[in-house]
Length: 307
Picture: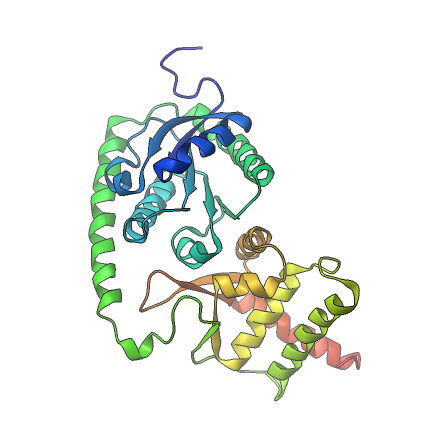
């Protein structure tokens, strides 16, 4: 293997983490069959991300990350990952779900919430295998691509600063509570919805949770349906649901919930809706296709006499 080949000895990884956690993350990368070609501390992301050769896997660990640096860094990471079509693995604590999802939620991003070492290594191995075909075809970034990426980074930095000012000076009365708020009100269309549908959906959700009290948790996991019900009830009630709240509604481990949110988004049933006054948070909503499906489902259930 050419000693200058950045992808010899397994798939290449660019690691972004607090220095104290870099060693453990690098060990997980090696166990998954990859190697860390570059490690970047959070304050250095703005200057260093995207300067490496090729198209490596981006591994991001937000544990212990300084909040002030992380917000701008995630926006920059998203821009680079999108521009170069890079796979991303994120290890994060529960309290970072809304911020990370607002910035990075997408089809090439695997989000692991307080995952076990085995889950972490497995996710890296899968992402590395997916990414390896692309990296073999693009072992070097051409000079023109590097310059374009530099310009992109500068533009993203400018936009991030503008958005930060807007979120700081926005109308406080419109903000409601913090990131942990369960729901926030908004105006929602209710065409072809019968009176009482919202309460009906909430009863269905309560009935599903009631089973756990009799048989134990973990036996009736169906996160996709639980999230569909929660988002449809929220739509009928005129409320919005944050990503972290939707994870709770799924009634499964956060990593599993995040994986299903990704799948449902790719399937065209969920959509991410940015908070217009706080870019650190995004809401999940049902697409029109999903709304039509839920309306048709309730109508069919009524025709069968089961509601």
